[in-house]
Image (cartoon, rainbow, N blue to C red; front, side, top):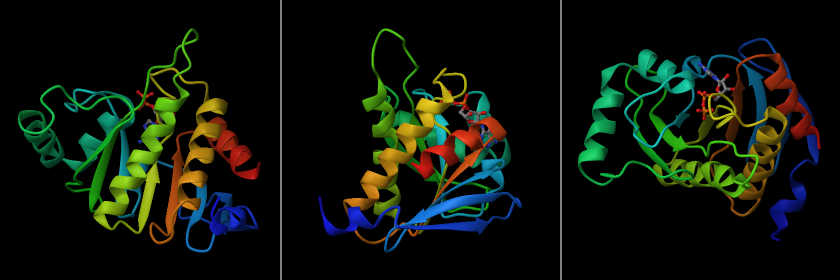
Amino acid sequence: RRAGAALIGDAAAFARTRSGASAPSWRNRVTTLEAVLGDITREHVDAIVNAANSSLLGGGGVDGAIHRAGGPAILAECRRLRETTLPQGLPAGDAVATTAGRLDARWVIHTVGPVHSRREDRSATLASCYRRSLAVARELGAQSVAFPAVSAGVYGWPMDDAARIAVETVREELAERDGPPTLVRFVLFGEPALREFQAALGR
Ligand code: ADP
């Protein structure tokens, strides 16, 4: 492990967020990690992560909300990706960026979570969503990234496990390298989700 890893979790602090929720946040030398309650389409960050599906052509949940709020430019770019580099769609665990359209962000990073299964452990694929999304964010030069609880809606992931994997993976990934993003924010829909992410951040 590199030196940065030991620093994560050292400096617990309480940050007052835009939505007014008081959330614990943890930072290493460069990056603050926090969980807040809110609608991710209202976030003002460089990159908003979308819990998309493999088709990239729209769905319900946070995907539907992002396309509705961001307007048709996002779907148009997703269609172009399908016609060019991603004819089979985006595999689960991977991530790709498009414009953010009318959202108050520069990019939407689409990632595809795995559907939860009780027979098969797909947590490595869920972890990969966070790793790949952060890698794409870094390639773009994004300073701030907002994540929803990937796979924890229609894809059926239990929220406690989804939160643990999200927080552990992002912490690990941030510890492996220096530099941006300087802010990673989990934007959760509802108190139960917020509680699970806060608990994971506190461990
Ligand atoms: P998946 O198919 O990956 O499970 P969903 O969109 O169904 O994705 O749900 C992922 C999580 O995002 C769920 O916890 C859901 O409540 C939440 N969610 C839905 N809409 C929004 C939104 N506008 N902002 C933030 N989170 C949202």
